[in-house]
Length: 489
Image 1 (tube, rainbow, N blue to C red):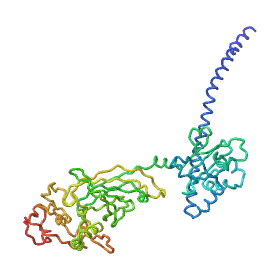
Image 2: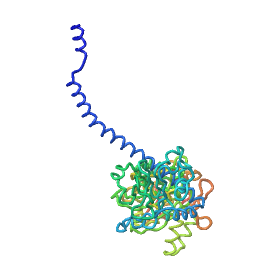
Image 3: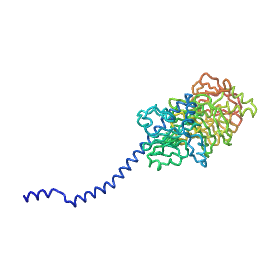
Image 4: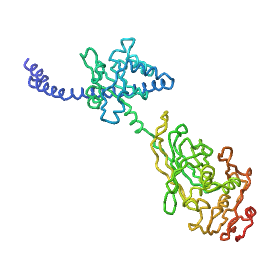
């Protein structure tokens, strides 16, 4: 019997051991329970924040439908009648002062949606949210949608699951008749994150939407760039802008002198102007004067490649028109119809080695109609090329290389002594790459190519200029040069 008692005693706990164990468990619970409750509290707050954002987007989508469908005016009058004006904006703050008298709240109390048919401002909340809300149980909460009646957009959304309803403390008309229970004041001063987190009140506003756009915006990028010195001096580039978003960006093209990196031109091209045809765009020249100039432009939608013609050969009729105009009339005509790079004056009146840089920006004036949001790109530089002649032209203009018919035509712009050297193996006038510009109806630029065009007149060489054809097939082109006194070898 004694042995049996000893064996049983070995398997039990003493009273002291039990007391110590309970004390330890109490301490652990005292530490763990507040942390657990805090975690649950934070989880509820984050969930309500997420619901507020979802309902903001849903309500804004429905308001967009009302605005585009011609129903906004009617809905707006109901908001002003049934809603409550937010009178809590600080008029000493210039940004908030602009919102005075514009922000109306329409509210839904907790459990009101589950009770059945909605009325008053609750019916307006239901109209904005019920269409895009799959799980209708989430509407059984305290909700306030603030609407800017001037712009017709959602200003903010509150979402609370731990209160009976929401009101503006600064507006007596918004207070419930029975203030017993948990009612939350949503005046402007009550909206900081810490205050709302204590009450687990979710909130999403137009400021959050703007910040989210800027954080998630796609980085714009110039994916390729090339300065082509051929039958036209053309700048080609491509970017990652989607075709449907061209109206939301603009391109900035800058031309620099290769010698001293001085800026020669700044060309601002709205994305909507990237389409094949003559396009008028703003150009800032060396003297900081900004005027609209017309350029031949091509745009390949498949490859998203743009082509801006900086220098092109004109037909005889267009040259003749320019020669007959007075200085004042010629200036305006050259802005709209000339395709020579010399029209910009300054250093560009003479042959010059240049390079270009292209950068693309979001257009702040573009209407936000959805689609991709963008951040500005880096500026990407091109290769170097000569403005009037071949790329081997010497910096002192003493030897001007001729590789294309455009280079041959540009002899007319040279007043100084120079040797023009034909360096091309072949100059084929019937090639489709040969382009000549003229004016069509209403002065718009037109272009002809290949065998469809006649050769424009080439001026006689001056007495201090020579044409050297030893490096190319001079016999192919000498017949088109008028009789002259210069030396031809």
